[in-house]
Image (cartoon, one colour):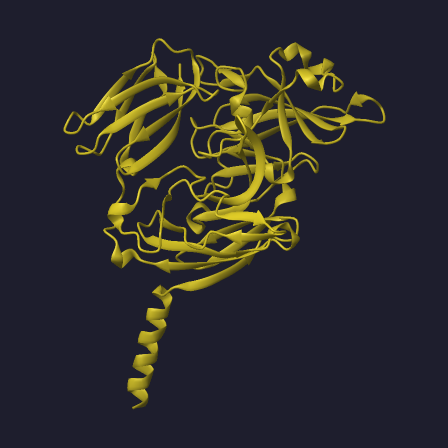
Length: 407
């Protein structure tokens, strides 16, 4: 009998591992932490938000991106496209500066990558280096500024910065730093603390998280359009895709997206002096390991405690799990050669739309692939200017956004 009971207990424990469970976590009072969560292991890792200001993508010699820390409320401005102005930046002339923001759709398009240079902050050279041509200022608060310049990218970043000394009315001495890509090779970004002048670890290994609870800048709807606004919510891992549905959604009802703000911030609302969550909204999360989890939020306390809770359930055995079409998209060469871009699609059934947007959000190119046509589409983009664009690939069930560089 004892053996039978032990066996039944073991079966119960295994079943519990795949059953619905409630997760409680906290971003801290005032959202002091970014909290990363791994669905398969129910593991939470928190990193202090104030530990860094600038993050540098390090995944490839050819993939560069530089993000600002939205969670601190920092603001990036482009202040000059003349490097000779470095010693003459006037902090009393802020009305002429151009505000820039991180993308909320993809990780590899930060605020600094959206400047007016061909590659956001610099120009591509025949030696395969990107060299800086834009001077930025980071605003930390009232009369607190850091001027910032990315000098060079080639398998790593060389940048310089200087802090504004309000009492002296001058800039402090320049600090020059090089951060190679071969550091922290199991992570997506390298992070730097401009205040302390040191590198920090501010995210888990890439294999150890699926979603992150953080603050980010969104295009918040207002009368007549949108405005940039910092919100608290959820962004997801680059290898994750998410669909929004209901408790009874089946695979045929779901449209998966690789846009990292698919969960975003609007699963909650503030009414009557308290937050409520959309308890009838469910998110279907397809992980890099090709498992599917169903998640819905239960509570959210807001900045007073940063506490929240949600239910999550592994429903892989209920779904037809396979890599969705957009996960098998190849875009090459990127950067392009002679502005010719090839998109290879693992999809011969669904109608596919290829849409290219500039950094101002304007649609500048569109091409449709009809069902049963060739899966390899070559886009002739010679009519467009050199620079950074967003390619959005839409099928009947999936969407994917990729950064492409035309040269």
